[in-house]
Length: 233
Ligand SMILES: Nc1ncnc2c1ncn2[C@@H]1O[C@H](COP(=O)(O)OP(=O)(O)O)[C@@H](O)[C@H]1O
Ligand SMILES: [Mg+2]
Image (cartoon, rainbow, N blue to C red; front, top):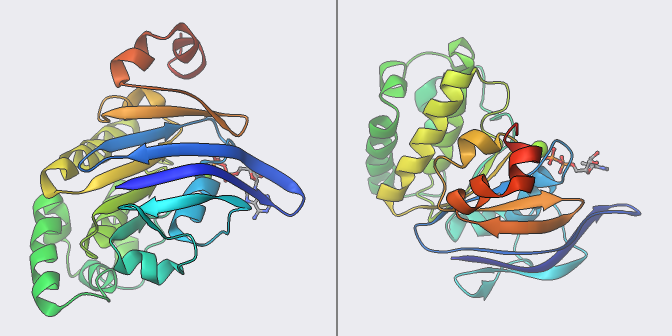
């Protein structure tokens, strides 16, 4: 689905990611785990096209996409849940969702409303409410729902756990796990390794601009270095 080869990314003189290669297969949920400042958002911004890599390749279904602007990547089936959601606070839940579908036909929009309201029944209940009146967790759900409205085949999720109470982190990540049943592949970047490892098929560990380890949740949970650095011993 997604294949990234040897990406070097930075800002000005400073290189942040020094040759990142990874892949996400069809219907796979994959995490990139790393501490604050590791470069997770930098990677996501490059994949959606907000940042240009210095070198390296990005392929979507074996087609190179790094020359495409963000909207064309979205049209090709990439969805984005940006860091801290970025919903439209003064619009209703329904209007926020509709904006996520601006490239879609009415038939798809209708279908995706159903998908999103099934994933997040609370959003259906609140559909006429302005987004700013939602709780933090509900706002994150709205951000995911909005990304799902574009009917993506690959969803990029930037740190959905940020700022949420532990119980909501679990709930929101659980729903991301359920996206498996909707023929969506997911690449999520997370600081919360403990919770993310509960829902993914595979994860990479990002340290000092390199992916230093990868494995199944079980392999990583049993790795002494991962335990010590990311899972609280
Ligand atoms: N626009 C920018 N200009 C310069 N440096 C940046 C910019 N955005 C992020 N950085 C730096 O890049 C590094 C990685 O940031 P980021 O990708 O946001 O990390 P993460 O999402 O893993 O917390 C940090 O050292 C950060 O200060
Ligand atoms: Mg970030």
